[in-house]
Image (cartoon, rainbow over the protein chains, first blue to last red):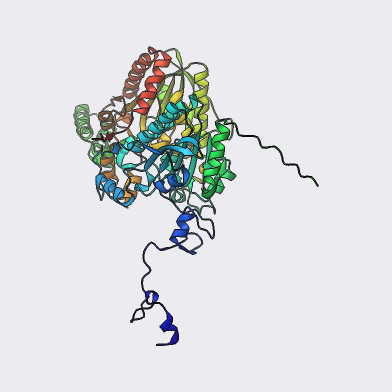
Length: 296
Length: 322
């Protein structure tokens, strides 16, 4: 045993056969973009944004709400609305099995979580898609929870904020899913009538039936940096047009350049900026600070 | 135009070929074989009837996509008068995959909007196979607003594989264009009747199909995703399209059962493409009835009913707390 080996703590010592001891799972993760090896706690503290390259890794609906809303007075809405299997849908797996698997992985009952709460003391209703639940797909439950969220805004005179992260409509509910596009979009009219703002935030990914319904009907449409946003998936487009897609195609920055979104906001600034936007749109007066005149 | 036979119509095709041969022979012969022709025609008709009586959902989607199936412009030509086609979205282009304009229906002004496919290759390419780009949906939106301004009822004809999945379509905001139409149609202050005449392909179809009455031709389909698309995602193989068609519940009968459409318009034996006058007659009747019903309802009530219906879509359960 060399002097070096003798000072290595046993925890990270190689095994007799020279094999590396496995790193405990969930301790380290690699950034999907810059491949930097990151300590998970650091990544979580940074809202799943890579501290090295600012790549926005996906984040669960609950974690997002945790960061977004003030800790006091949060109420979840629409939890009692639960999925059904109207078509008795079965491919290689039953839809009901897919639902219970998704529940096991995410602890959610469907792919939209709605909460009433406040952002920096401004009361709001926030709906957030859980991409981990069947790709954030929109079926009847998402539609109904969305409608209830909007109705809560109308009843309590609150702005509505929605974070989308979805592959589109949920195939397993057939045409019922398609009709959720009409349903979610139709209810927004009630919000407009009350002159209540709808702020729509498109996160990675916002595609298909979600992108092509309420997501772009926001009074303000925001994208997270680097998010994939579009109607058709890149693979489908590539197969249709038979050419390679340009770099950055369907990314948030591409959309901003083409005039499709109002703003791109870094996740770490989201809470402050949303509070500011709500203040502006709700015409909440702010104290006027006297201009600082420097005497020099 | 010469009929195009589908895979499951082989038997019918053979009869028709024989009849054709006999007709040709009859012209050149002194023998009267008209009795034989009549006999064969009856047989062919009988076979068509029995084949069409038990079509699978996948076969129905083949009929819905039949190249000779009447298209929007065919309905406009046969059911309406004084049609003035109106072009362009006023921003970018005129999308030929969506047609629209003003016309008379039984003497009354109506606005017509529909997806337009083609019957032959040349026309299909010209119409981009009925797959609209954002400018198509924005043209439709412009015409809807125009109709609303002059209190003209709107009739839409739905027949598309889906909105066009292309680079330019994405650049110009395909999603926004579709979403905007859904939003506007939900509150449009005129009666809206939507007829699925062929393929109701997902969001690209829905973008002109939100209204007060949804009618569907017997052999048309309406689906959240094409059977092929569904099969390639869930089974990783497009060969499972017929299984997907079965399970997705895309046919008029199934959708009527689930209350997702209001009525099924019957088609002639062997599908709409076999007998244009017959299908035109059925559609005319259905349209007349629907329009009359909608026009009897006061506008505010109509809008409320439309909203209630839209917000009522979906199947879920409510978990009652103990």
